Image (cartoon, rainbow, N blue to C red):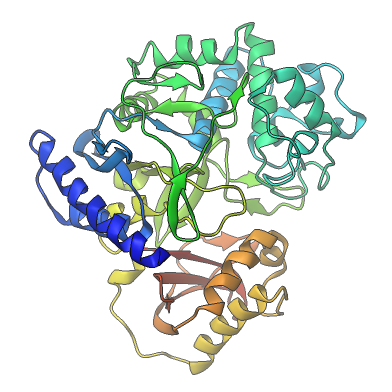
Length: 480
C-alpha cells in the first residue's frame, strides 16, 4: 500500500517537475535535466535547484519539482533552502578571516576564547575544531544532556553548558570524527574574537558585500520569501521533517540560501574577495593526524579525488551539496528539500552533484567505464567478502589498519542494509595508478578496481583502492 502511494505521488511530482521546468525562462531539456528528473523520481525527492558553473560562467541554472508539496509551488532558481552542514564552510571562512586579521590563531587553545572550559579540552585547538579532530562527540551523541527532551528554543548558554558535559571520544588529533559541537564552538569563537553576533558577522562581512540578498541565518520567526518546505521519508511515505527549533547560535547548520547566491559566493571565493589564496589553500588541504596519516577533510570542506579529478565538497543533512572540481573549472551545487534525521538510512538525496558533473567531465563516472574481463576472479570475491564482513561488524585482514580505524557503526549499518538486499555484485574494470601520488589513511594506492552493486531500490558503483600487496585501503560508492 505504501509503495503504491509512493508511486502515485511520484507520478504527480514528475508532472509538476516538468511544468516547473517549462516555466523557467529559456529552460531547455537536456541530458542533465533527464538525469535530475529520473533520479528525483527514484529517490522520492520533491524539489531541487541546480546551478552549474564552468570556467567562471554559469552554464546552467534550473529548478525541478516542487518547493512546497502542499501547495504545489514549483522550485525556481530563487527558491531558498536550508543548507544545514553546507553552513560549515561559512563558519570556517569567518574563522579564517579573523586569522587574517590576527584576531584568532589556528593553533591557539580554545580556552583562549571560551571561558570556563573543562580540563578535558586543554589540548583542543581552533584547528582541531575546524578539522573535526578534537575528539568531540559525533552527531548522535553531541549535546547529550539536551537530546532527551526536544525544545522549541536553544540558547547559546544552554548548548555550551551541554557541550562541556559531553565525553571526548579520543585525544585531540588522534582521529577524525564529524562533530556539530565543534562548529558550534567555532561560532562562539567568531563572536568572542569579532565582538559581533555570528549572524551579524556573516551578514556584514560576507552576505551584504557580495550581494547575497537571499541568504540569511536561521530565524524561525522570520517570513522568508520563496522558502522551500522540508520533507523526509518514513517507511516509504513522504512526511514533513519538522526542523523548527530556534537556535541562538546555529554556526554548525543554520544558513539558508539559493543556488544563485551560492554562485555569488563561489565567484567571490575564486576572485579572492572572501579570503586570501593562502587561507583557501589551508581550508582545502586534508588534515594531518597525530600519527602522520591524513584524512580527507580540511576546514569546513571535504577534500577528495575522484578518478584523478580533485574534488572539494560538502553535504548537508537537509539534502544539499556543494561540489567544486577545481582542476576542471567546474562547480555543481544541488539543493533539495528531502532531508534525513541523524542515523536514518532511508533517505538518499546526495550525490546528484557527481552525476551532473559526469555530464561535463569525461571519464568521471564509473558507470561510463567500458567493462573489462576480470584479471583475477579473486578480486571480485575479495571485494564482496569485505563488504559482507564489514556489514556483519567484522574487520577482515584484507583491510589496511588505516581503513579499519575510520569505519563507523553508521557505515556498517548502511552497508548491512545494502548487502541484505543484494541482487548482484559484478566486476567492471581495474586501472593502475602507480604514476599518481594517491594514498588513503597512510597507505599508498597502486590500483583502483570498480564494481556494480544492485539492490531492488538502486544501482551503486563501488571504487576499491588497493595497495601494492592487494589490501583494501579504502572503498566508496556512488549513484550515477
